[in-house]
Image 1 (cartoon, rainbow, N blue to C red):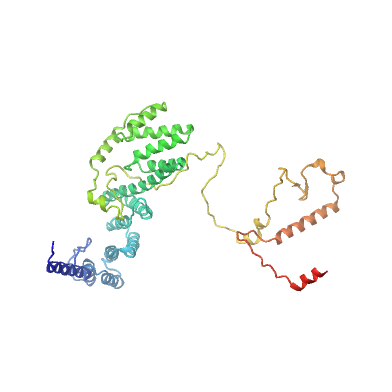
Image 2: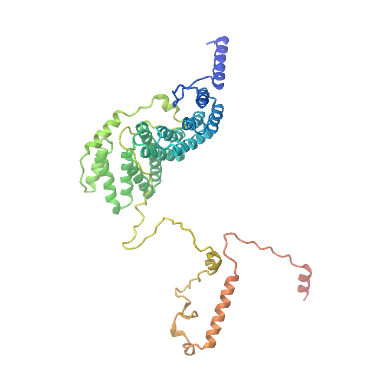
Length: 445
């Protein structure tokens, strides 16, 4: 098929003109928060001019105008609107730098004007900033975690806002991606054969994110991991199979989970009617991605959230990994081992100068026979470990022997203090070159 060159030329010219028009800022996108008050005040004129520049994508010019308004009319009634418009200009400009600047400006607006209606919108824009940068479940979840925190903050700080329902759905989408991230990690450990690690990841997934679209699959794999870990984890495996039957009655693993419970001689629960209604609603209202979505999904950076829940309350607490079930529990009455680190301010500033360095007194090497060579007595001198081997005249040492022992102890402590501190680097000593004349003299002698 021969394509007319003139048609190709016309199409190329039209595309070039469209790109030129868009780059010159001639396209117009209406601003969301204009001021409808009709007045000829100078601060209002500056604000309207800046809004017109924002709508035509002249963001730098708009920010200069708004900053002039703020600096010149510091008591203006449009001061809050001007600060919000600066943040909106960065948000519309986009890019990594623009979104970072927009987040900072929105945070400042919420800090200075927390009771204004626009503060909820500012918080929703901060949530949207990280939501737009969120990547797939097999990538870095940094923006997904930040987006979850910011969306949760909006629901806590502005629960009655008009943005709350939309933000709640965004939070379900975000938690779908975070749950998929943990689920993929659990599947990896299960395939590798590290069943304690797999059980820990899957347990955290189904506990923190019960609305996850593959929560039933995670529970099934969780029960299998506990089964492979030994008989003492049968109760945990039975609990996982019980949750499948009770909380996910439309799952494809329900019949297999019932058989597992009968094999473990555990009661088979009834399906929860509320969970049944929720699963039915989710299956009927799930978004089915089209053919093009499957084709271009490999090249897309953003995750696919079509399987995210459309109902139910999302988790309002952050995800915190638990201790694996294979780790022995601390004995009753004992403090156990804690991973928490406490920080306190040092009141004595001379502690480093006055207190001895623990590295200068290394512990004594253990005796191969298992018995310590000597043990310190109350006077500070060292005595043999077996008193029966001591000589009779050593039973009651005199003052001379005591002073000699203390002198030896002082000398040993000084020698220990002069020793170099331990280090992780091996010190290489340079070998001195031998004098050839001295070697010849030694050989002749």
